[in-house]
View 1 (cartoon, rainbow, N blue to C red):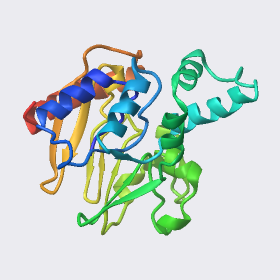
View 2 (cartoon, rainbow, N blue to C red):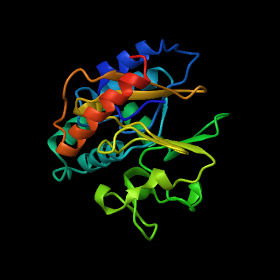
View 3 (cartoon, rainbow, N blue to C red):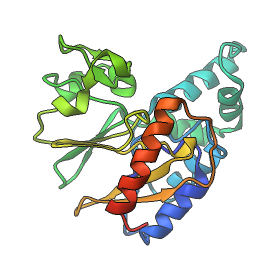
Length: 237
């Protein structure tokens, strides 16, 4: 299980080496946001595909797919240059693979679920809103989901289980460890770390970013400093 990649191909190679990943024997699973912001989105998609990896759809994956669809209609001007570059470089089979990604993924035999952003407690997984699943970060006091950090509490802090949920998307909060939810977005593309979890032992592993690929905001930078210390103590790398 691996956190948000955002095109950080070198770091993905480093993490796979750190855990002695065995193609054909081990399974790579991503929490989504494989693309955009970082240096080699196409390389990340193709490496994950070549390893038989699995993933859920992230909001940036969705953004690039929407840009690609708009580009085919000559209407992609509303998207940023970085998103347009990624959409242009993806081959048709890369696009088809991204389009096939589910919103949620059950890890067989692990009593765990994978989602990009979050799940609303009390709503069946099959009835969760697509928008919420790929963009939510918090729950307001009335239980409604929101993308905004400051507009509620971490949704994962209120997730009742019994399934363990693995998610990404929230680099501002960074590494999150709640009783029934683990957040693995430790801001690799912002110069933080790329973090994964090995099953069945649920052991954390991380590698440092090679450089800052996208400038972090002040809140992300503060979280990175905290996570760097925590992950050095918790992991072997």
